[in-house]
Image (cartoon, rainbow, N blue to C red; front, side, top):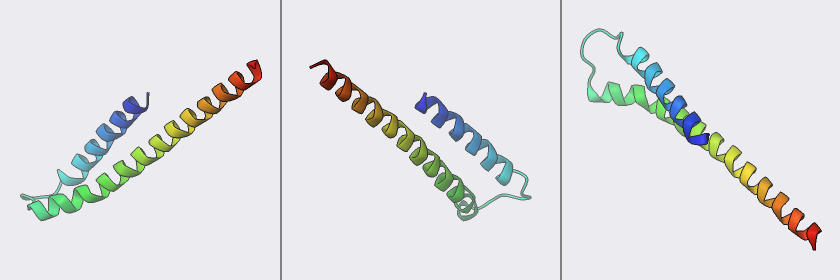
Length: 74
């Protein structure tokens, strides 16, 4: 699930970047293209960080539930 959300966000970010870059008149230099993609990659990294934090929180919580369940069975 996390990977699917991550990929969906990546596709949306790539589409937003294309919408931002394509309407500019004339060819863009490599410097201008990298300047346009830098904020998109920062947002992408932020989304990845948030998704990973949610995933890790869920994993740790489930692990805690398993430990408590095993402890109560004893």
